[in-house]
Image (tube, rainbow, N blue to C red):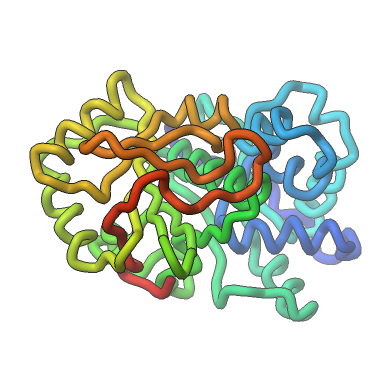
Amino acid sequence: MGNERTGERGKKGGAKLQERDAEVLGALELWGVLGLGQIDALAFHKGFGEVERTRLFFNEYGEDLYRLSGYKRLQDLKRSGNVEAHFYRDFPMVFTLTTRGHRALKRAGLARLPGFRRSVSGHLIEHEILVNAVGLVLSRLHGLTVRTVRERMDWNSRGGWSHTTSRARIPDLWVSDPEEPKAIEVELNRKASQLYPGIWVSYQTALPRNGAVLYLTSWPSGPESVLRQAGRLGMQFVYVSDLEGFKASAGRCVFHNCEGRSLRLASASSGAVSAAPEAPVPVLETIGGAV
């Protein structure tokens, strides 16, 4: 991806904070970093159909988006110093919150977190945007209570996680459910097979009853590879599906485990939440933070 270049920080003063402004700033505080398409679907085009909103949540958009009012308002927020634009090689522009933007949320009584994310390294940006895409689809299209990494661990004053090793034990996303909580891991590249045992033992010791760890993979034969590892280690709480299938189905894809059981997070027909698995599974409590 190359090195990140920071956009113009903007002048003091500038645009007056409006209701949609607060929604944009609040989303950046919660999700950390968002692309133009994601912000547009969140705050400016909520009335779009499910297919189009899913595409935007995955930050897929055309040049026409730059001519719409949402982008113009985002530019106002950038010029006023409330958001910051970041550019990476071969990757679309993304945005983060600024100190000024976070203070605006605090003044309005809308801040949910003590800190905010200032930037993302180039080698992580694609993963961060896709993790947020999955969370946005599940929370905004299907009404699931999805908690981000930022909500589930202590953050330092620079907006980063407190310790790398503790971050490694935090799922990318957490679907809160008193009956059947679920951790979600988004994997864009094949992981060394020797890493899975330690990760899954950590999950196994922390899992509450009736939870599951759901993997979304994005490499050829990803589901088969992870399921093969899970079967070899007897980790029946691990379920896997394909990230592309998740996107194509707007989050209604089926996850499978090594014993042939399956579950889905959203109803195949209505879009209503269907958090219960089609067969009972052992499950998981929070790893390294509150549920």
